[in-house]
Image 1: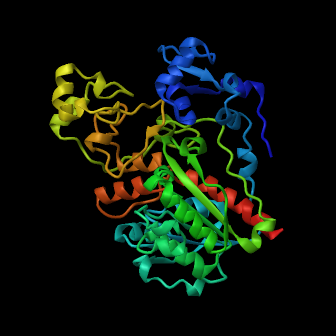
Image 2: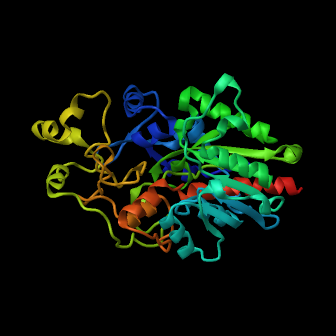
Length: 418
């Protein structure tokens, strides 16, 4: 159902240059050019920064989807009965938590990494957590008992001998284990998630093998789609490729629609301070620290800036050989902005090529700041060393993105019930 908004709300909704560039998957330079030549009406705030009113961009599909979103109607959807779920490669729980919020009951979660399993057990002792190599699991006990099978499998090179594709060519990969689970469990619906790069991995052959395998196993695949987390109440520029498949005997009654986006983009101010996303400011927590030398380099970088804002002599010394490499290298010496979503979080917050410096303080983001950017609740505690906690959070599916996908899957399963 198409949503609606009042003219007063429309006039108050804005999008920055970088946010619009993210939504449209174009460069910031392109959006700046549009503003300069008047292609789309732009405005200036009190600091001189350019922004756009969403109402002036309605001809752009992602903007139109935000303006006329059915987000709030979709929040009201509930399962017609308790839907069961099995998840592989569960990690620190981002996907599982989002699916739980949507109404799924997890009957088994598998993860091989010990600290991640401790995290899951600490927060959800009632969940059935299996700490084991997925290759050693027998899924036969779950056959006929599972509505939804999910998993974010690592993307390795696949065999494509003779352009055959299919189940046999996935052997030796972790996708094969997900496919084996599909074959043994026969869930009604399957949801896989992966990085956007899977689209072009091995010149597209990897995805073709995956599609062929899903078809061979007796499932109908919805055309895969890359979802941008910033459209689903996640203050982070992160993209995930989502694959959803329905068992062939159920397809005739299946109705699926992708989740509607939220009506605005969340930023780091939403993540770190009380407001629409969290009821209180981000709590204190552990975090890494920069060495003194790096701290001196990053200290003068302004909010939203990077190495290009440093003096020339400092640039040359800090960038070294990277200075002559092609590309903008905007992740180096990068200080985040409170008024923008975070760049995609990595598994380590202080690496030179992908620095994520705090907007106001010269330090890496803390554990709880990392977790908020991934929309984990503050009460979700992570186990293991600080480095392990960063890794679990950085590898997770943002909880709110998973929740939005979960609601879409509940609607799909509800359609199968009728």
